[in-house]
Image (tube, rainbow, N blue to C red; front, side):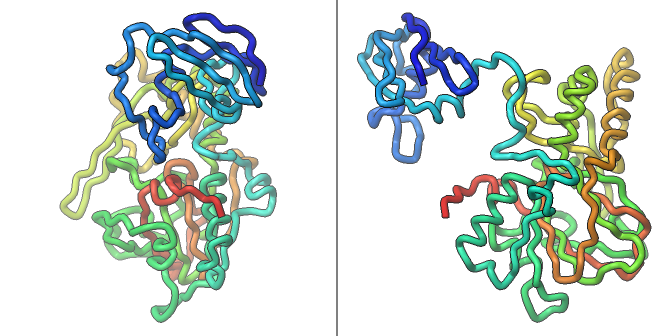
Length: 371
């Protein structure tokens, strides 16, 4: 890191990706000294405690750290290059990596080409193995726990969920059953093929993670299809920025009704934070054609929105984005429901039986994994 320029209002430094400017007030608000931050990284002051005009009195780079003295309060603080690069908001081009610690993948790139990370149940109490799996979930959005019981006497889906946190109960119960039913409340509870989708966009909040534990596999059909929604969204942003702009800035409604519930929510198909449609971080994808309520955009936008919607839908079927495999008995797939779309190719054997449940996102993405 190298100091390029400094005046009363800002500091400019050379970082790995080039010059980056930081406002005096932003730096002062993010001061890292002991009088400004608690050990848990929470501020010890309110922004209203700062002077009306915060200035840079002096700045230099010492031993790889930016050191700044502020006026008029005389506080001095320092930041290393990694911290500044992580929090840099001076975007000179390109867009940020999608999601926290995410590594968007294509079909042949998942897990470095070896497929989803796997955790053997016999190793689940090993802190290092658990940490590797948690990092894989944060990075790839999917992992498989194998070696589970397929009856009622051994490790089951609740035990897998408990590796990270408590099951989030919904109107489907703590654990739901993915199998053919006489009067299904959801098309997932039939043998029919299912287009790739994210679950429950009609809830607020949407379940963050889903688990699917295979008890009985299908000899015919029932192939699991996964698509990284972050990768698909980035492809759309590169190929059709106008379509990406519409899908990331217009909210549309979702709805599910049954069993005494009428669940409704709305939001953009692609949720973007920070830099907007051009530079913004992709932080969630919600795509579920079955649960999309009638779109309610203005007349002047409806035709253009539908074209963008269909463009994204077609993109989700590209073979290079689809990772396909058959979930075997004793395997439990854990995946990010706000990122990884899942589907079922081909009509499955009616005897196929999976159990599912949900976890709130924080139990996995809020973990500090330092083993």
